[in-house]
Image 1: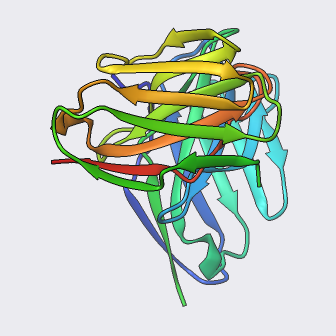
Image 2 (image 1 turned 180 degrees about the vertical axis):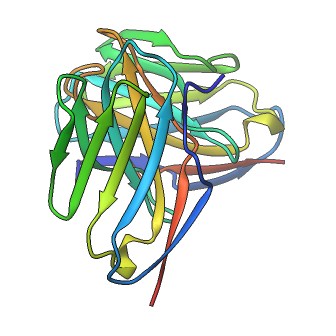
Length: 112
Length: 113
């Protein structure tokens, strides 16, 4: 079964607001996490990653937070824009040389 | 964008016919992967390769075979397609396995009637 999941299937936000997309993982041994964005008709696009020795990592307008205590990963998008509308999903790796396990995805819809 | 090209982008075929999907990369990455993406499921790994002629099974490998005769090409073959193999197929590449992000192609939409 899935070991990576997302709390909400859809998220609607106002343009300009901040978005927070959440992901719960079940395996405490997971040590590497990735967020992907997927637009309609396209392949998943890498956004940001984080290793388990970190709690936070920032990119351009995005921040990933990792809470290992509760096995929770979140993606924060600042000043959400219409171009951010897409499906977002997280992926985790459990142990060295393990493959990635992907969550099902959540749709982010940005209201103008 | 990572230099990954999948072909064909769309294909419709009949049950029982053989189908081959191609993934071509220009990044010289060691690892290549084939996934399928279906509603209600996350991406599921079919097969992967860790070098020329080196391949291994993923979680949904039944009914699929792969070959990698050159670093840049990874082929996925459905020997006798079934309707349950209707899906969107994605190829991905990575420098290392698991500790570096995988980068994806834009997929092949395969319909088996």
